[in-house]
Structure formats: structure tokens, C-alpha cells
Amino acid sequence: MRKKLLSIFLCIVMAVTMLTGCGGKSTTTGKDGGSKKEDTKKDDEKPTATPAVTTVGEGTPLEMWTFVELHSKFYAKMVDKWNKENPDKKVKITFTTYPYADMHNKLTMALQTGEGAPDLCDVEIGQFPNFTKDTSSLYPLDDAIKPYQDKLVKARLDIYSKDGKIYGAPTHVGATVMYYNTKILKQYGIDYTKIKTWDDYAAAGEKLKKASNGKVMMTSVDTASVDWMWIAMSEYGEDWTTTKDGKANVQLKSVKKMLNMQAKWLKDKIAMVSPGGHVDMEEGFANIGDGKIASFPKALWYMSRFLSYMPEMKGQWAIAPCPVFEEGQPRSVGIGGTGTIVTQQSKNAKLAAEFIAYAKCSEEGEKGIWNELGFDVCNTSIWNDESITKDKTNKYLQYFVTNPFDVLNEVKDEIGKINVKEISTTINSQMCDTTLNEIFEDGVSVDDALQEAQDAVDSEQ
Image (cartoon, rainbow, N blue to C red; front, top):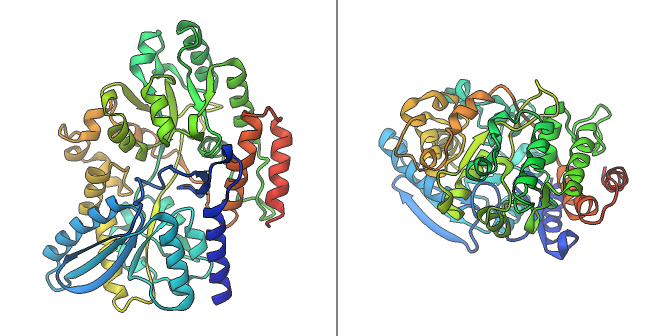
């Protein structure tokens, strides 16, 4: 086990210290297991830069690590609620918020040495497969989650499960949607509600280019994120980590179609390359805020970015299902997430599991996740609770011109799942460091670039 965990640690170190491609900026493992340029946000909110420690509650002492300070604040509020509802099981939790890479490395070493691990720890979805290679150091959450399980989205539990046992409490669905700037589109005579397919989308882009004299483009394509390819794979029911022969395959029909389509958009000047590599960076926020693009796809957790970085655009943006290549295909895919684990080193693992299941999976906890963090929660009973979905005081509902819950309910049976496995880090690093730049910046053909990517992936499997 020690050798396996040492291998995991080295993989994380390699992932966070790579300095290749993408304009020479450093890259790190991103929220979907992919590589992104440094300076970006991981998972659901901006990670902390330095460790921060807070102790909350009175009762059995527990320790919890996370890499997002906003998560600590949310959990702290849930400690108070838990202690009031469970006077015989009160907890006192010390939360430590570390920088993203530091926390995952520290957890790996603690599990390797068999000492020093916290009772609870957030693990980013892209890192999760590294910690479930050997599950002997993790405490199963099945019994703790069972009271809430029938209302949770099964696909999100599956992501954090192995061999029939649940090892991570999910945070959100991460349903991907299309964000449309209705102010810009209306100005140039484009009705986004008529866009159903990618052909419709490209036609709208051509109209926008002509009407705006090329000042506004329909979207931006990413060189440091694989979200667009996840959308395509979901639409065709493909998954580059799950193939018949058990080996990863990046030369999928869906991936080729998306990349060729995006390359044509660039050639036709209806799209630009995302400044900074993708829209979830400072350069991306500025590009959107300057009105240079009229739309882009991103998961629902991106709503918080609008409120944090583009508050002046309140009342301009609509949320809608993603276009598809062929009508009838799924119009969304779950991207991003954090699974919270309980370690076997905990002296109070059962209590820790019961608390985190309550904090993240109960109706009370899910309401808090929506109101505090703005995430599309996994408990589907919330999606139709009008005290939540029609709450006029909610800052997220106030910001957008469409109701995110309407869209979520519209696509609830169409939210695809792409697996995140050990090989995912290699795939996403290759794509974000080399392949996407070759195609979109250097003009290399999609077939040649994907063959090079496949060769690189094959060398690791």
C-alpha cells in the first residue's frame, strides 16, 4: 500500500508542477480532472492561497481539511445546525483550508504513513481516483448517506463510489448549460431560444458577425479546458476513459466532430480562442464583461462567477440547454465537483460520516449549498420546492433572466456522466498542454493532433 500511495503522491506532484504548453504558463489539475493554466479557480470556488484554521462547535472534536474557504464557512454553519438537532452527538470541528495542491499532497502523505490524516477531507473530483485506487484508508459512507439516498442524483454518488461502496459525499450535479447574453443577442436580432442544434448555433454566429461588423463573436473556444469535448462525448454517449478494450481512446467520433466544428468557427471568424485558455480565468471574465462574446457553455456552478466577477451584467444573461449535433441527444453533462471523504484514521469515523452526510445530503444541507454556494444540488426534491426555486430574494435567481431550476428540470434526464479515472489526468494534460493549442493556435489538423495525443496516452497505459 505504501508503494501505491507514494506513486499517487508523485503523480500529484507531477500534475501540479508541469510547465508545458498553453503559452508557457504553469498548469495544474483542474476541476474536471483536466489541466488548466495556473491562476484559475479549482472546483467550485476560488481556492485559498494560505492555510486558514477555524474551530466551530462544542462536542466531539473532529478535524477537517478543505481547499476552498467558502466550503469551510458553509460547513461551519452546518455544525451549528447539526448540534442543535443532535444534542447527544454534538461535534466540535477544526477546519483547515489549504491551497489546492498542498492539501491533496498532504492527504496523500498522511494516508501513506498511516498517521496525521484528518477525520474529514474534501477531495476534488479530478483527484478522487487517486484516493480510491486502494480504499482501505477510507471509511464507507453508505450507512450515513442511506437516509437521503433516494432523493440524490445517483450518477453523482456513482462518481465517488467503488466496488459498490460510497466513499465521497457529493456537493453538486454540475449540469452544463449554455449561457447567453440576451442584451447583445437582442441588439443584433438573434433569438437564442430558437437555437436547438450546433448548426443553428453556427448560423446565429454568422448572423451576429455580419450584424455587429465582427465586433462580437458567438463564443470562444478553449485551449486549456476539455469541457467542450465532454459535452460532445455526452451527446454521443461516448467516454474516452471507458472503451471496450479497457484502454483510453481520445480519437472518438464525438471529439473529432467537436474539434473540427470549433476549428471551422475560428476559420469563419464566428468564434475566438478564449483569452487565458478558457472562460474561468481573469482574462475570460474580462472578455465576457467587455461584451466580446455572446455565449458559452459552462456548468451551473459558473453562476457564482457572474455574481463575483461580472455583477454589472445583472439582468443580461439567460441560461438554456446546450445545443446538440442531432436533435434528441442529451443536452447536458455533469462537470466538476468535490467528494468529501472520512478517513479510517478517524477515532470517530461513524460520527464524522453522519455529520458530513447531513451537511451535504440532507434537505437542510442542500438548501444551504444552494443559498450559500449557488450550486445545483444533488437532492432533487429541492429542484421543485417553490420556496427555493421561486425565492425572489435569492441573489442567483435575481441575477439571471431565466430560472436555473427551470433549465435543470428540463434536462434532468439528459445530464450525462463522463468518468474520471487515473488516466484522466494524462488525457487532460495532453489536451490542454498540447493538442488544443496545436489545433486552434497552430493549425494542425484534428486527426494529426489527436493521433499525437493518443500516442502520448498509450505510453501511459
